[in-house]
Length: 317
Ligand code: GLU
Image 1: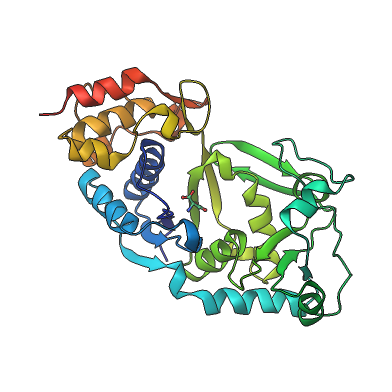
Image 2 (image 1 turned 135 degrees about the vertical axis):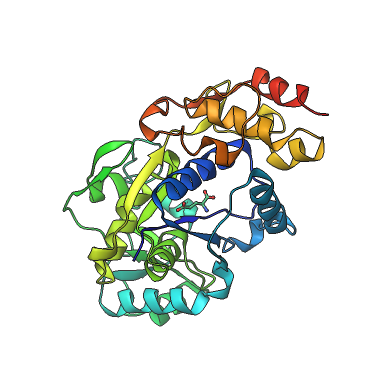
């Protein structure tokens, strides 16, 4: 079986240049090394899913020349699989119902904080309810399901970010795998999907680095430790102020450059520069295949500056 990777866009908006950079790196690694590419649409966060976003992402990928071998697989078609996995972990005592609201968790004075500022769940509902039904009766509504972590450190070797070690109790806390509306949370869906698609390589932004130990715990709890993929976390593309790429940094959507006549080759030339490859003003994804080398990728966050935007817009025909 060849290695398998996936492109996993969330159709909560159009692709921005940061997403495109991640997909390009993923695609280049895959096509250099003969991995299969699965396209998976992560459309579980239904209130935030935007009509038309999936079509726009598909068009952007086609325009950039990033093809795939399987999919699109939609998470919204797979709710039963996630439910079965959550129920299994509940039945085995690896997970428990939780009636706390976000505000309860934030207010809990004893809640320690992870380095990234996220609140660590203080464990209020651990061993509190006999069953999900009992928790729901208590709360008078649907309840979330949390994975029970223990103190054993989680270690893995990231193919770009290097050796990683997390203390689950101190840095992660019991995390949500099932949401109170009955749908699965990201940490569960991603593992069920990656395992079923036989994904062996996960390439994504390093904002998800601390999700990886959680996902490793879920793989183990589901009895699939041999399926844990190899992880490659890439430095994020950020605005000139160092903050995560957002509207305040201008319109960095691939779609808006495409619509105003910027050639895809020019967008790819900028993405290539962000990968440490100087191609001048124009290159195709295919043209980068024999030039891309993961070890040449800059180690610091990549800056999307007004000059980057100017470079792209100057190319509009
Ligand atoms: N859908 C996620 C995103 O767009 C990616 C999740 C993943 O790669 O595991 O950020």
